Image (tube, rainbow, N blue to C red; front, side, top):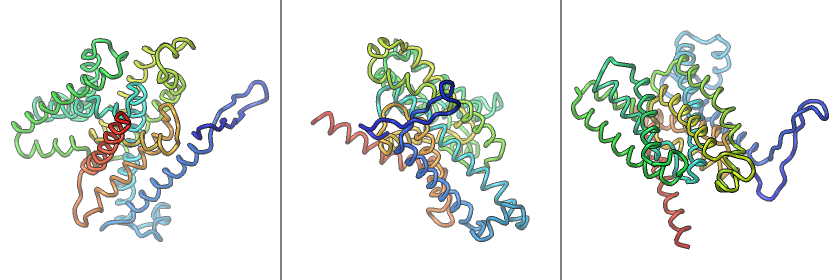
Length: 350
């Protein structure tokens, strides 16, 4: 949003009975730009590498007129992976935007709250400690839910104490990581390596089924997150101010956390607990749009761009080598986290 400028209106439907939407030019421009970045990175991903499709031949292959190898590379490997990256990035970012708004803390992302570590612990439990009890992705989802419940109990006041959520989340995350390390240390080398790659976050061998799963989740959860935008803006102003205008802060926080957990769980189920996308994407979007509130649409677009670009770097940054995309996002996110910490320290010291 452009601060200080009134929003523009868009009327849908007949006069007096239609719906009037408020919008601002800057967030729209930001969304278009970051989506353009995602598209460019996606095209480079498709055309680069040993099985890359030359840009001039790409329209023919998309139309079904390419060779068998080209069509296999495009429709079986690269497009599903690209779709999962974009949709999972959007889901992580929406979850991060909701958690940061609920905790009123730029560091209050699912990574800090303990969801990622809980998902990793669930994956380790399903794949190494009790193999065969459930699929590894399902174990990750269960682990994320258990982590959130532990944070809820650990605060002593549910989700009504934002700062306690961060502290409890750090404690839960530390215990979850300890469990993961213990499971990896006792597992066989082959099993440990396979689960470790998934825990780091990976987009290798994604299928259209994975894309459909995360696509349905985004389609259902993004409208729910949008409906929470206005109540969360009021809650960010303080519980007393929100209550004065008829908003129930406790209920809004609970619903926002549930939507955020579901978004994270869906993303984790298809690509593992990829680190720091939920932390960085909403912050980047908020700074670009200069907006208040969660800004879920801009965050979703930015998250899609961040993960698509990170996957491009994971595949082609070093010729002949590929890395789990979570390694790249962890490196980038660590730098951004350090920037946020220094910025917050300087602000508090001023």
